[in-house]
Image (cartoon, one colour):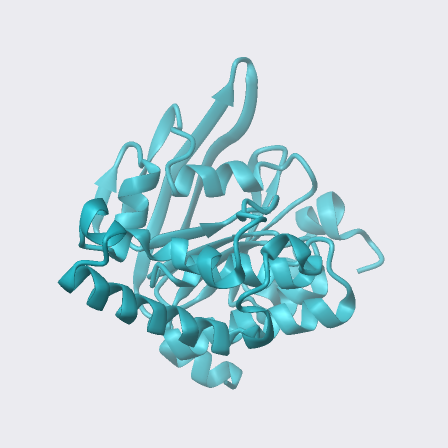
Length: 265
């Protein structure tokens, strides 16, 4: 999708972080940070190691509770979020360190992302009773479509632990997509990948955004990737916000150049 068409699709603000501060003991992880995320955009969070990027994602989906500030999601204001509420509101998450079930197949790992969509009780699911069996068939069809979308059909029955790292990252994305998220939080989705794997993952992220209309917030260290696929970028350094804007605006920000990008960029 061209830049102009992508910009035309971006809607109003869906998530606002208001003056977020987070400390662990005497260590300040985040200090008075505010930024917004718009519907259908790809919003990148960048910064050096220890800048507070993963902490911010953990605040968004309720893993961490900030000491100060509030979160507005879809017009509702929260002083704190929790992971289940975030998931029920349509926020899905992948993690920097893969948390897949290594002994389970690709299909079963992605099926685990359908848990919130399951209406049948555990007893009905275990014995595949009537509506439970029909529900499982529908959910398996949904998951098979994700497997096709991510081009991992050949591995659907393979235990995830046997897959190369790049494909495991793709399965992790698939499990998050199985939740049918309105907003997808990606924590370094391309860490440890080679150039070809990064190109593939970039394509899938853009396709998720374009075809499903999913709003994406991602942390990524590869500046080439960030500048290519992001609509807007927020920059953190030592837990403080030092830049916020389009990739071009951030690239020219003197504070960002000094703290992160380096003079050579």
